Image (cartoon, rainbow, N blue to C red):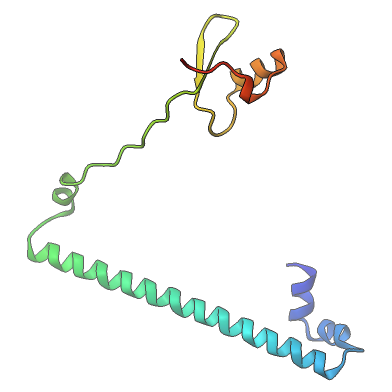
Length: 131
């Protein structure tokens, strides 16, 4: 728990922090906290409504599957998993053993490329590209 939260949740700590404040400032803090509370309540209400709608849709699908005498395995047969597109390699290097390493240039730099760039004092843009 942060010090700020500890202060807000402990009456004596809050009282100490409010000493010397003007009533108008305290009223402003109270108003702001009430607005934040209302926003959090509204968000929780929206999430509950979304969850309830999802639950109703799921129950409807289950009911329709029972009526049609379809089980989950039969349903899965009609759905093919979507394959991720592979990204073509942009860079290629040969290591000291003569083995080629390919990299698309995305994500973390593979160790062979990192070592190659350090040894040859190169940046990513200076790497040899695939023809």
